[in-house]
Length: 224
Ligand code: FPP
Image (cartoon, rainbow, N blue to C red; front, side):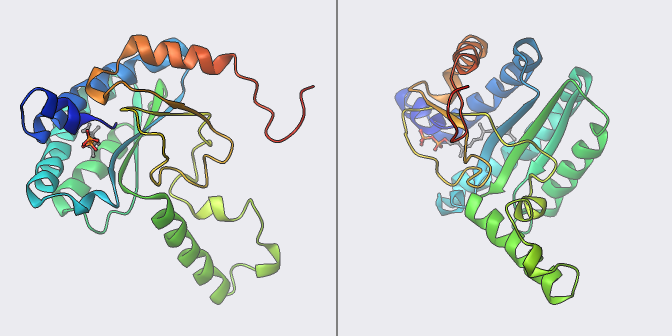
């Protein structure tokens, strides 16, 4: 959800104003999913690198996440969204972790759309944490190194219950991955668009997904 800061700066407002505007766009995008056949949506809310921002911005974002979850829980649940969080929770405050847990439990039986919120998430950090747990299983005799293959590591990733992404959309004109779902995106299609996140909505999301639908995905093979 990139471009909130620039969106605010363009309006002569503080960056957090842009994050609040960005948060308001999430509902529309989530609610578009079932209409266009998107069963799983993952949004990148805060990266493991975002702690480098000013203390004011980080604190403002953490407060926004608490407010967002508190305010949106009922709407997300009534809509039938199943919400999950990925990322490392250790650096997050207890109140926020409790709200995340509660929202996951509240929505656990919902099936309209699967919304995953990446919060304190980094692809490399996720692989490192997964590897640590995998190594523990080897050390304690639960896993034989001879049996480790491509199917093994994903079972240790935060996304172990989720399918790999088909389409990754990056807003705000940046053409890089920035540590998002590194392992999982091996065969994802990418869309890099200029729109700043607070201006992104149903129409553009629908158009990008329609465009994805006509792409020729070969997964390294040849066209049949
Ligand atoms: C990146 O834009 C955006 C963020 C780091 C925050 C995203 C968070 C929200 C939109 C709040 C929604 C919250 C939830 C839990 C759904 P940027 O600040 O890097 O923008 P810039 O590139 O223009 O500076």
